[in-house]
Amino acid sequence: MATTLAKAAESVEYAARLEQVSKSFATPGGQQLVLDDITLDVAPGEFVTLLGASGCGKSTLLNLVAGLDRPTAGSITTDGRPALMFQEHALFPWLTAGKNIELALKLRGVAKSERRGRAEELLELVRLKGAYGKRVHELSGGMRQRVALARALAQESNLLLMDEPFAALDAITRDVLHDELTRIWSETGLSVLFVTHNVREAVRLAQRVVLLSSRPGRVAREWDVDIPQPRRIEDAPVAELSLEITEVLRGEIRRHGQH
Image (cartoon, rainbow, N blue to C red; front, side, top):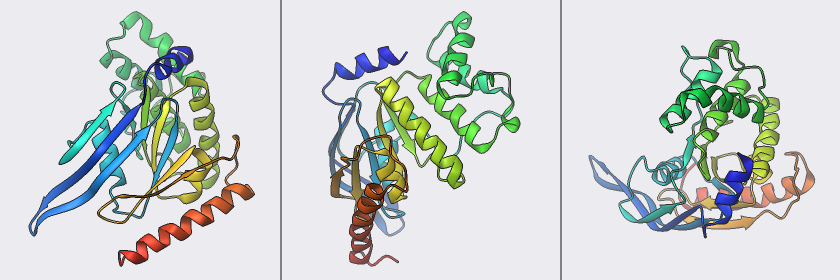
């Protein structure tokens, strides 16, 4: 599986390309511009984090890339259909961990005879070997997010979209899952577009951090993260770059009059 994903990623110019993307929503007071003229590429195998203040349009942008909504203007192209992982695990509680993953495989058209083996492989990839038969209520919050990640990986997409998937977890569990996500990204060759409001999380994970301005969301600034992996959230270089990004983010919030 890892080899297949890596080879697929190398064969294309980009995993996602956004060209002059804008998005407006109708409100009682008229059209509200949420995203304005976003141009952004995600390279094959690249890990990009989207950062910005609450309400800047990060999740809206992710939904557009996922194909759940359409831009008002501009174009979005992706390398196949992206896989999407939400903040909430959204597992079906009446299914076991393995059956939740098998459902994604079924929707992909994987033969019934192959599904259990593939599900068990994916559970092993996210370090949940032996959890196939466990019900959702038997899993911790971190374990549920691992199953959700395995289910997303079951789609065998080259682009994984993640919308604050670790925000509800405690700090220790989140740190462990940062390690796991970094390992899986490295092993599979996936491209990742990861939304967060946590500056240190953004720097901890990404090769590139993209900061959106406050509404309407525009690309305010980008940083290449030239810090070797594996990184720790408390590492001095991570803290130093996080401080620099935080100051720019605060400036954006002040400039738009948000508190």
